[in-house]
Image (cartoon, rainbow, N blue to C red; front, side):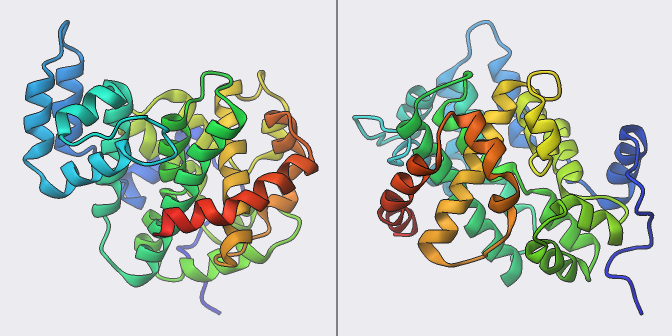
Length: 296
């Protein structure tokens, strides 16, 4: 019987081994040039918003995406951005750079049907996570744009592994239907690595914040999440909890891409968010309208 992924061990690799394996063999995409250009401008003592506007506006699709992001209801701005300059000013440099990273992320992978469905699902979770920040409030320095960016990048290791291993779709099916063991544990019984580690390394190589990279690394790890702040920073844990709840709400609202993850992580996520099942049900009652607005 052929293994779905390249031959590997079920043993969890060390960080050094995983870094070498992922960067050399898995094929993590390099940081796009436009992110380098924006970072260079942000490092200046007085960033030139006009130059940044020109950089973004040179890419029509990217400019349109940044405007859609700034005008999305989950950010809750009272006025609407009509130009790229206004979007940059409303979001701020850091939030803008992360939003642009999220927009660029989708286009670096081939537009295959399975991957397109994956990105659509990630976008719904990201936007719902941003909405949850508005509902539950800003805590642990996690704002709506932080939750949104994390939602986009949380599972970015999946398309990388899809591209590398043709049989990885079968691994996903097995992990999505597993009721007890963690998602990443299922992956590592059949692959040499897992999507959380690969995604974390990609976020790190793209120079995204450490809190975001750590949140990607541990988003299926209930033990580490429960050990904050020793095991994981409170900001990282909150990003994880917001996205897990967002995914649960989206799945309930749409019946699409059902997984078993909320059943494994609901307790620790509710503790991190300081909510209970009653609050979850209240949010679930509102979520269909929110998700419908996102889909529209």
